[in-house]
Image 1 (tube, one colour):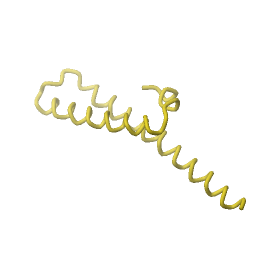
Image 2 (cartoon, rainbow, N blue to C red):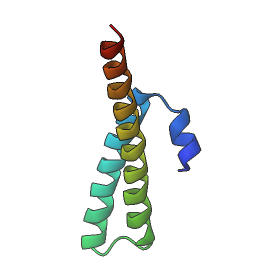
Image 3 (tube, rainbow, N blue to C red):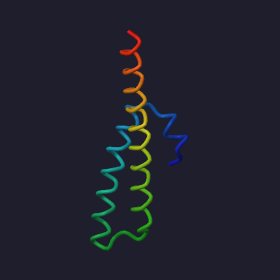
Length: 75
């Protein structure tokens, strides 16, 4: 998943996607332990996608906090 795709998503969509990807990662790890996972690179890709999603979510939270502080200071 590309960063521009993530940035186009709403905050709720990002949160939902994080949960889905974490479940997917758990399943992949389980398959890997049972030697059923043929493409182990999927583990890395899913972890990176989760990190990207969390990064954008954190950026939005920081921006929101900054805008709230500015509103309080202007009053």
